[in-house]
Image (tube, rainbow, N blue to C red; front, side):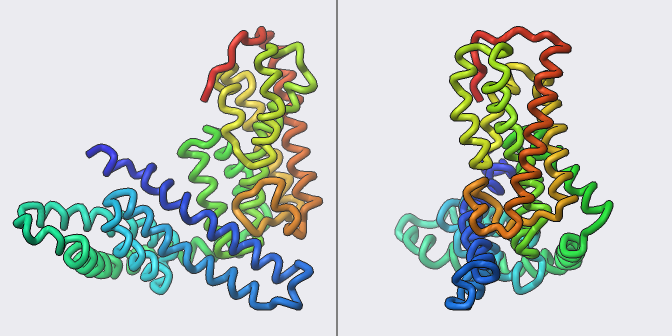
Length: 338
């Protein structure tokens, strides 16, 4: 029963299925805009845009699936589709996914006493029909409430500039490093994801990715350069941690944060904020929400991305060393696993 009301789990389930569409769509749009194939294959942009449109039904469908299993998929799809046409977009799709999933759960309960001879009608007729019916009605209210806010949010993302953009990137940088893959990190990532879908070449997404890559890269550099501060077991993790950083997997720094806590965590947060700040100052953009260093081939501002990333990681590495010197923390004989 508790799993049905684990909101974070359900949203993450929806995002995990949505992410491949956004990555592929964003890269196709970029290739059609900046790539060598732009003139030969102009339909690549249209293909990318269609993929981004499908993110709403997929997001809502798999939130509903996480709640109600397979019967939630059809109502979830219509919830996401109506969120797109009703201009409530991501917020509408998220709320619609929950509405679809819990509607199915209520329908299951209402028909739980049906005769066994009629059980076969439930998955083929009753659940999809009533689920879609109830969800479509609920989406009228969701779109009415969420559409104005969603349109305002998109407008802010599109036109954000100057001090407001810098402050936003600083906040996103801090959030990305705060719990390194946890709920707060995912909130920042979701903001970047939304900005990619609506803005395509997104400064906020670049800030999020640089900030998320900085902690594991800084940790890997610390393990390589300042080996006297760490145990042999920790030093052996440097290559793996470095690859995780390059791949935009913030969790690569988690075992070290658990072991050394604020001694290295605060420097990581500061480094991530500085990397995100550099992104804003250099007007660095990204077309896709994942891939780390491996998507730079399709990134027009790859030079400034690397400069921002190197700046954040270098500052964080130096602060880790300074923090270790001040606190004089001895190397840990064991590494706390995530």
